[in-house]
Image (cartoon, rainbow, N blue to C red; front, side, top):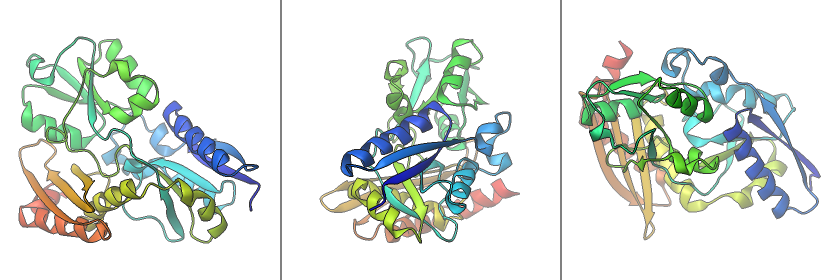
Length: 307
């Protein structure tokens, strides 16, 4: 058995928490195994003045980590699954998807308010076209503004008064011990999560079977089935991280219930789909949901976004 592994990770506090979590799990599972971290800066972390959809999408958060795997500086990489493109590069695999945290979006604001209570023109910050589209559809009185940076940076901008409220992933706040900043978690009906939101994934080279074998015990099959169904929706619709797409699956009684949507960035057009299927074929369920979205106008919405 390998005596040492190196995890490639981003440098943000949340990414380091995630990598440390995986390190602790691996070392507890495999006594004698030493796990080190290789912290890297990614293009997604550096381009803080640009909207992600304008500079290449969320894949910018994983490319440098994958390069570290390819050139042998690291053995595995830990990702937030919502940041992982629907199609991996050839030669890479997701060796494990861990048990999911709270998948909901969270409202963070300085006063105890709800979105509906914010006054007309209130400034709501988010980095996500998906969140912005769904909020614009429900709360057109709000001004949606781009918000970039790590979790602490975004909260600091709120506290300085640059925004009246911001939306963040509940899972990241909870992992960083910032749960007290959450005013309210939005229901999945109000804001459908991104594919894979709140789940951690571990990537390695397909040729590194000995690494995959060490990682596999950390996998959580129910979470993996849900995330695979969600990612299949994105893949079937082009695999882009730059479109307002939500997908969320739940497992009950051996069956998956999957909800998905594609929206225009301003929220004025939206296609929704809901379907269920066997948990042992999540990709088929995701493809079915994508087809239903197409029947309800998703292709037209996506074509308008691309034009």
